[in-house]
Image (cartoon, rainbow, N blue to C red; front, side, top):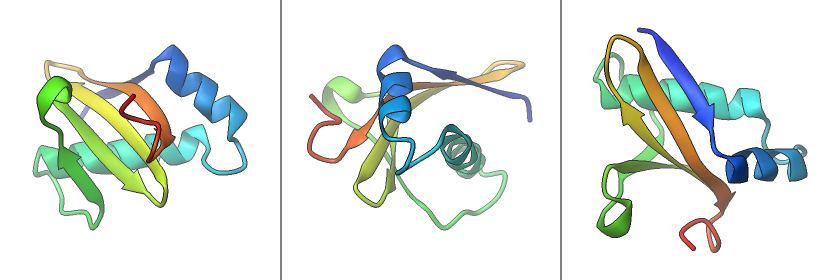
Length: 93
């Protein structure tokens, strides 16, 4: 599986401001595990959910109070675009 992970400007900003809570490598690992679960490559015990409404086509990963919102485009190389990383109360604004 070829996977490219792309971060939005807001996601990069959150990671730089909250490096003590979650790192980019942790997010990358969560995204890889989530994509494998979505594509049914392997089973992973993690909290992932397909979103509805204006976020239709996006998925959400929950890690404690932090939420990671991303979309997945599947071609020869799959691309996971991380739209937002933020705390539960602020991520959907």
